[in-house]
Length: 138
Image (cartoon, rainbow, N blue to C red):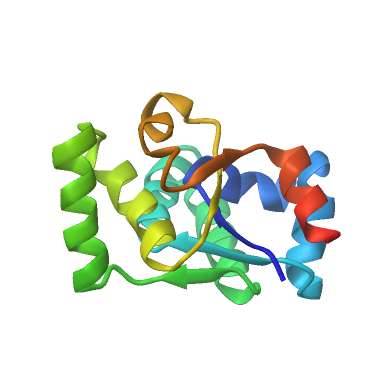
């Protein structure tokens, strides 16, 4: 089974954007394993909470109740994130997210943030929605 790391920007879309429903279904059905860093919960809480607190809480609860795996920041992830931050000068949050995928042996990150993640493309490959859906069918 393929495994992907999902960046924060796509988590909320899994719940509300029809173009993401096929991927959300594949995750729910266990056709693909999807992980995300717990740091993404911080980002989502801020982003969605500024718009609608009730909607934010419902979205967070729905994500936590799904088959999406939220990985805690371990010592190994924190050290790896520091290494990425030092070597590639990516923002701390993005370095933690990238380190989560790398430490968890995930080869693909579903993100549109090519500016920050392209620097670590030799460690974790950037994919788009179409590729993520295709991977769920393999």
